[in-house]
Image 1: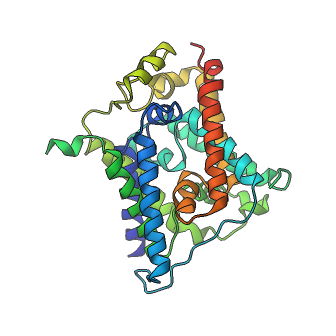
Image 2: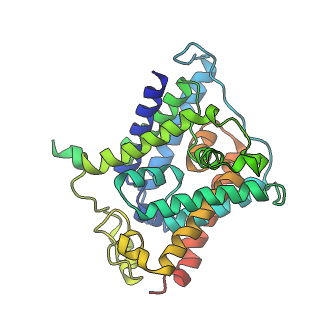
Image 3: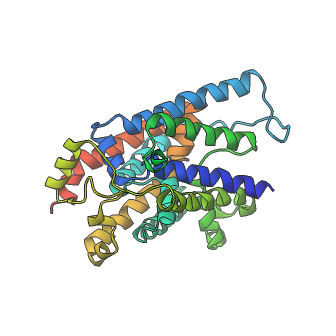
Length: 137
Length: 187
């Protein structure tokens, strides 16, 4: 049952990524050129509503569908890993025009070349695992 | 019923993403797509050699299901909910891209010059896709999250590290588009 719920959430997410054009290389390029409000509107409104929802969950102590306390995982403190990692991620995001979520979506759309990007992203993740103790955090 | 085939405006898409975040929280999970890349490494046996990948992948099975749903969602979005895949970006952006050699700007979902199967005949294109993918995968794990984990989940939860990561995303993205593209796409 839970698997079906996860699947449905994923389908909703995939449709949203495709239909909002957030999975389009062109939209990402346009965003980094500051030539449209579209992507900023998507991220900004998702963020504003997300903040309200999370504050509401915390404030009213809203329980999950299964009646449990909702846990939030605070990010570890630090600057360097987030800044350096973020910059590296941003370079790649702008180049291939897809972050991890949309990569999966685009495979569903049928772009075979995105498989190359995804395999490379898995390899990049592996590289991080190998170099983890050698890069500043 | 034609509206169903139209692209979604930001004020519909953004709340939808927040709804996905909310649903995941309500089923005791969190919103983060790049974690799946690590799980895939583990599934490929990376845990035998590198401790970072030595974890119980079954604890992340739910997220693999979500991402499998995202693949199906892409299929549904493109095949059942869309008739014209062209992305109507700013005409000024289209003109600018066409001058750079991206003739497909304004007529397709992804630039055909880079993502069509015929584009894979060019070593340079394959190199771009591979390097881009590696940067995304490496950077996401280094930063501990991607757009969903930091820009949406983390910032919504007022996490300072996520703000630093998002600033990093933009430093990287702006550098790529404004300073490196002229060298990479010298067509």
